[in-house]
Length: 179
Image 1 (cartoon, rainbow, N blue to C red):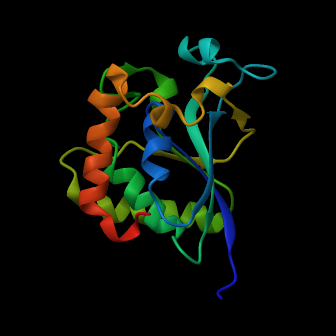
Image 2: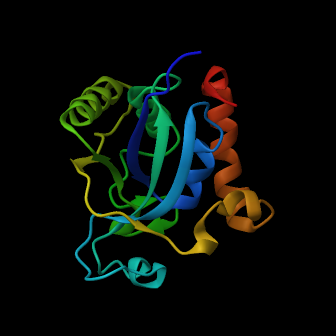
Image 3: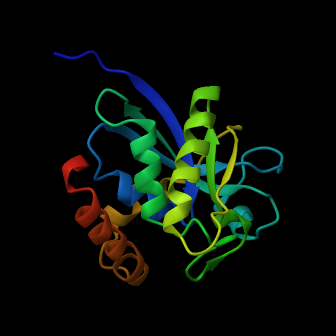
């Protein structure tokens, strides 16, 4: 049996409910936590404070993954394919800096990988990729009702209208990488 190689990734591509749902489908993902990072508010920010757009935090997921099963590069390719990395501070109807496209890297190798993936994928988009690549900062876990949101609310309007199509796209593009 192959030895596990557990690593951490922190990414944000709009609402964390969407990003979480995408990566719940991927082989090699060990844990996923929805949360906030990249802001300046003192203490632990709340969802309401984040939604104000005044804290500077982004809605993100922090995941642990087995790099022996799925690489950081593969995670980033799936991430870029399942949101619009050319939209500045928005994803669909979600508007504000809290919904920005961002990769928070945890070491120099992740930084270099993120830069290479963005450069490689840029030729597939008509507009420039605006995904930020920035050092990881303090991660704050979101409130309990934001964890595992899609799976607990699949019939809710936002979920069926926004998240379900993302999962359909994921399944079409990356079937071999899914559970």
